[in-house]
Length: 359
Ligand SMILES: *[C@@H]1O[C@H](CO)[C@@H](O)[C@H](O)[C@H]1NC(C)=O
Ligand SMILES: *[C@@H]1O[C@H](CO)[C@@H](O)[C@H](O)[C@H]1NC(C)=O
Ligand SMILES: *[C@@H]1O[C@H](CO)[C@@H](O)[C@H](O)[C@H]1NC(C)=O
Image (tube, rainbow, N blue to C red):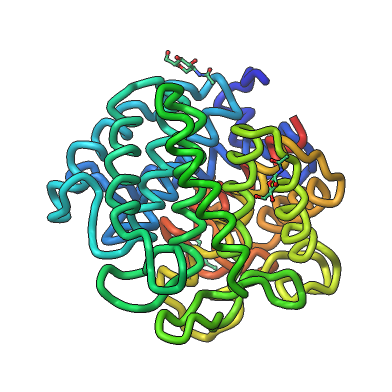
């Protein structure tokens, strides 16, 4: 796909709400430009958002991967974050006490490695995975905890563990069988415990003392497993992974699902609570970002419609484009809610996914 529009055409198109890949591309670029205005070059992250910044890095890489004229655009951002973020935030190698935070960064470096082919990023992903693997296994027959030393087993940390292990299997041929072994063991364990509820949604986690599943359902838990399945399928050719992931993706995207409003707009976290931290604000991003990864292997018209409907609603209902700068709020159904880096970041995920599915 080419990007032949002049700056003036880009600006005028950005204000238009016509459907289709061209407008998703223009809208994604405008959303990303605003996201970059909030990037802190000194600290290498956005504001004080740590794990969310990993996701914004993935969103930048996804835009470049979909729009080849953007390949190269953010290479200096990746390099800056790689060096400055751990240093300024007091972490070594993107490691901290939360296995899910580590996993988000591991996946981000894989995405950025795919784009840049810079081995430093792949090595960082390996270093992060090694630390996560050090947490295997819990007294519940497998898995890793959420926070090191605390007995809660969060689904999200385990989904990221599987995705990262399978992602490394696909990118490190000399150790493919080792990483694949970790990924399949992670997957088989995850689906052997009772984390999928009767509606085909993954619940938040497992109580590390009783080994019983517990907690509510969030969109990000329905998302990362889709990316994990896509990597496992790529590594094995085994369609079982795609089938199981498709059930979960269908459960979220089918009309009447608890995550959709009557018009098919994805809702979670901030949409459902009066006040909401960066955590809830972020949830929808990983769902659409990983649906894009599954769509590579399963070309579902239902998901494409869902992605287009959401990308369009974001533009019609969640945007403040004063001065042709795209501020995108977190309520994709509207009304506009004051935007910040996280809300622009997840909107970029949605636009990237719609662009990918329609290109
Ligand atoms: C992006 O650029 C890098 C470095 O020049 C190159 O290795 C890679 O293949 C390019 N990726 C895409 C998707 O064009
Ligand atoms: C495919 O993966 C599933 C889930 O891990 C496993 O049960 C099944 O045995 C695998 N099939 C093959 C042919 O390896
Ligand atoms: C839209 O953005 C402009 C510029 O940042 C701001 O002045 C205005 O108050 C915003 N509008 C709403 C409805 O928040």
